Image 1: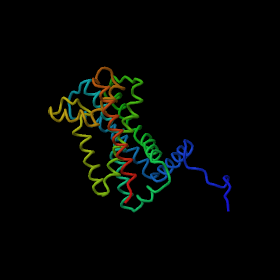
Image 2: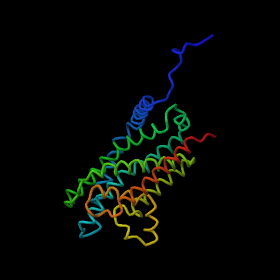
Image 3: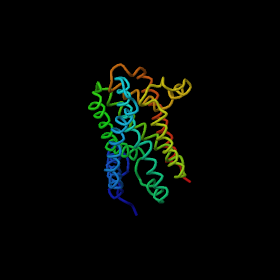
Image 4: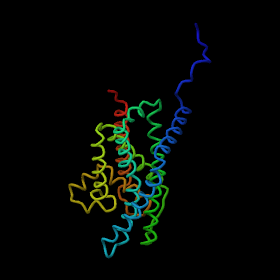
Length: 260
């Protein structure tokens, strides 16, 4: 018995299939987080605005450069915390609930899944970033200068944060360890990374280490797009952050593709 070619199911390849799966996965993420989404957006807004206003209370007199560091640093924190902290916690929760293997078995391109989650991150994170900039402008009259460089900077920071979160969340099989790593990263980002302050404030060895970690470059590229003359190593920061993004993508691909 022969089967007509017209009765065969279409191959699941091509740009059309990828985009269709991207749309479906984006809808799936929105529906899965429909109750948490408003809370996440509000948390990001409070994080961005609160970081600008709260940290400024530590100083009786804060200069213009410090204000710009604080404003752009709060923007970066708002952009990356969803992808690098919140996303891995959701993946850990899937493992605990026993739905992780099912979600990974879906016949969808891994790049479409990453793109769908990154797109949702934009919706969650951008309001907090805008809130941080608005707070700095209204409270301190910060002299922000928006340049075309801010678009690739923000997109790269969002993508890097999302893929780094993907990488360790999918590589570490124990959900409790994933949650612990995400909590540690919160403290590292807020207190021990030169995002909202110059790297020169750190001990020499620690500042040198941060030149190769992704957090200082995140701050540098965003400052390059929102200020004039403060960012001094923009090209290098874009290169370092791009390398981290590529490495995180490779690790994520390897980890997701593993089979027991």
